[in-house]
Length: 327
Image 1 (cartoon, rainbow, N blue to C red):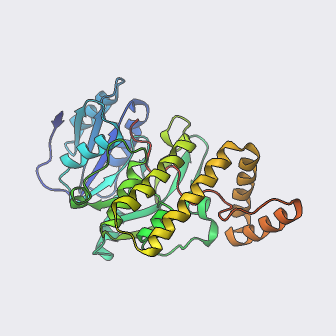
Image 2 (tube, helix red, strand yellow):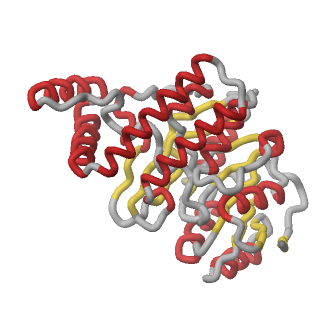
Image 3 (cartoon, rainbow, N blue to C red):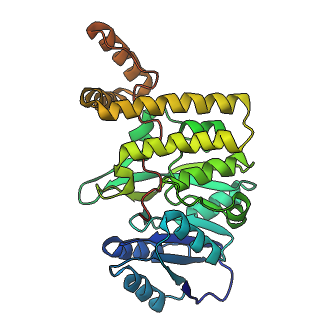
């Protein structure tokens, strides 16, 4: 493994960008980092054994601006790329960003102010947009939770994140947390979600800023497009959490509840008619709000004789998160 270095002082933020076969999107991602209104950062790009021009793109940025550094290694998967990037980072806080996502210009400045005003937490996350390039942006909070979602600053506890992972593009955490959790687990499909679960189970504290500060690019080539694989991975992650940590009664119940929901969602993925019902419920959620949509769904189901699943919307958990960095 080799690294190109150029930082003389310790910056506040280390933006870690794992990249695998990302030549087509990496330039836009790094341009957005360079365009940040907040200047006290470094960016560590990890080329995870790409065979395209990923390394050339990353190296060009490092030659233009010494705040960019490049780590090149043989392919080790997303967890290995994250671990290499964080191990090379020197900033006080780590910011995660996939090689196809975009940090909006005010991302680092708002996160810095947020950390200053809400001190004492280990993990800081914000709202963001799902982005279909050339088409539209959808506010993550409104898309998945509707207008009932809390819009003020708040914290999520372990029981909450078991039930639904927060939007993690641009999520920021204290650098020492990586070592405390043992890094990202190799061989795990949803390595970012696994990291958050283990961090919270180890006593870390989370704080959420409701402003949308990043874009998550949506494309059919991403890992997260394999929805059933994501759902089965999440079953494994919460099951491993139960095995490896002493959970409270509430947390253990949340694991059981979540596994049931995920199994139901897998059945929905395999049932085309159930998928249509799921999409219909998503539409109702957006138009009427989650609670009213739930009443409408129950009324319709009672008329046509369909059962009402406990989580009718079927997408309480972000199926994307940051699973798309490296294959």
